[in-house]
Image 1 (cartoon, rainbow, N blue to C red):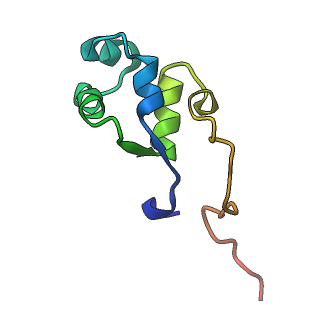
Image 2: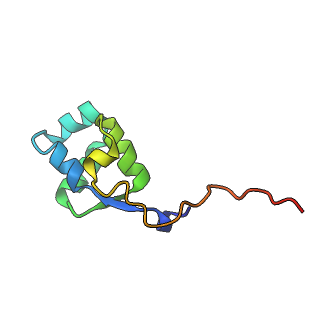
Length: 88
């Protein structure tokens, strides 16, 4: 799956989760890079890949489905990560 095929999620639920914390505190508590947090706060319409969404949610002790309601809405068939060898 290429980067263009990955589902993308807005960072707004993450920002809402730690809205009351200063950026440095978010960095300390959840291990999210300080510049990333500042960038998100300056541009809250940013989107992240499903892999990053999962990583950040887990770092905050959440399942991504708790932050993004559409996490389980799979509208495309699952593609294998590698092709299986076909026997001749």
